[in-house]
Length: 311
Ligand code: AKB
Image (tube, rainbow, N blue to C red):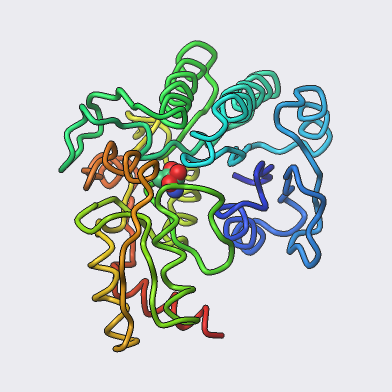
């Protein structure tokens, strides 16, 4: 990667990613695009308001910036998607289709995040293999499976250099997630500092894969810089830094805030989504094919989150 266009740049992943891209590739070589107007104090110098479903404008902006890579982050998350599946399809599938067509026409590499949401209740829950049953029961999951298959198709049929990962829940102190099932694992840290307690909308004993944002950002860059001849499972690699349930988080936070307490008020919609997702994926394909190596476990993440949020 030398010159990069990021869609969905003001979202949870984009906010951290753009900072790192600027550090590594230079401010001149990173264009942030988002449906929002440029936020005050946005880090990068290049910024465009862009709705990824507007194919014409998307193409023109890309042609004029002349990147070699698109990191296509624009997407609706799982819980919001259940409220509005039509909007989700438009952004997650039609927006992705526009990205793929632009990458094909302009000969660009393309990164697309998939998700643990691409799995469903019939998927093996523990040690979820790289290649396995994918019959998701959410609109988000259907869009992610369609995205994985479309990306593989564009690679095989047109030679577009598509690459992707199945992200777990991502935890970051810089930007809040926008309506996912795993969001509790971010909100808990805010409430731990503000109130000393948290009420979880996900029930005890519900395990999901998670990852701290610095590892997620490194993982995108490492995959896009990887030797293409080593990549077998392009779209999309299982990646995860840890697997825990809300009570594991409670114990981890209590190591730093001893009086912290957790109770539960389970949201049936998000609980049903969480129950349909894996407990813990097998990430060996990512390790073997491009050296995936996350640094943070739960306690290391908790320490860093609480320190950074307290600042
Ligand atoms: C969500 O909960 O929707 C996302 C995801 C796991 O893809 N964080």
